[in-house]
Amino acid sequence: MNTADRLSAQMAFLNEADRLKSVLRATTLLDASRCENSGEHSWHIALYAMILAEHANRPVQIDRVIKMLLIHDLVEIDAGDHPIHGDHDTSAQEQIEQAAADRIFGLLPDNQAREFRALWDEFEAAETDDAIFAKSVDRVQPVIANLESGGGTWTEYNVTPEQLEARVGSKVRKGAPALWAHLKARIDAWFALP
Image (cartoon, rainbow, N blue to C red):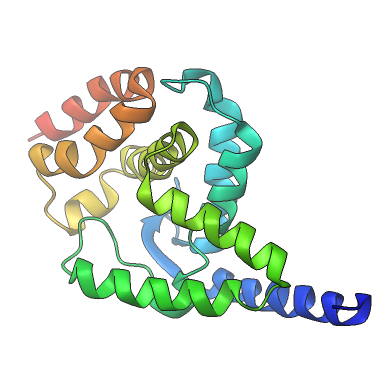
């Protein structure tokens, strides 16, 4: 691929990635003034990873973690955001996201398409230390948003402490147990409110 074609493919991908800014999430900003978009979420959790890497359960390559977090939600351009506490068909959603990954990463030159797709697949599988920590950070950011915004989606989706533990706590604890332990007292206090 010549330079002009390579640049054209890269620009097509970057232009497509801009659409992530239009995908609204259920999670609000900390001040609860509005819902965040998926582009904001991806940036914010990359920052979380940079700041909180020292609390990873195992050593991680922070550059790889940040790459995963910056691209992990690009599939939402086609698939939309489906909140973890929402009611949706997980299997059908996974198929839609796989097709979205094929299309979106396929816009890139072959070597970058393979690299980004491999990182996305690694994040989704959550088996490597880098991906486990990346998943932990992805899960914890909405928890903090809910704590800071008076319950946020927990109230909207009638989330129970048991659901939060199963869907979020177990994932965060796997990659960043100190982080979950730090948040647990605040979470318990929120759920104890009348």
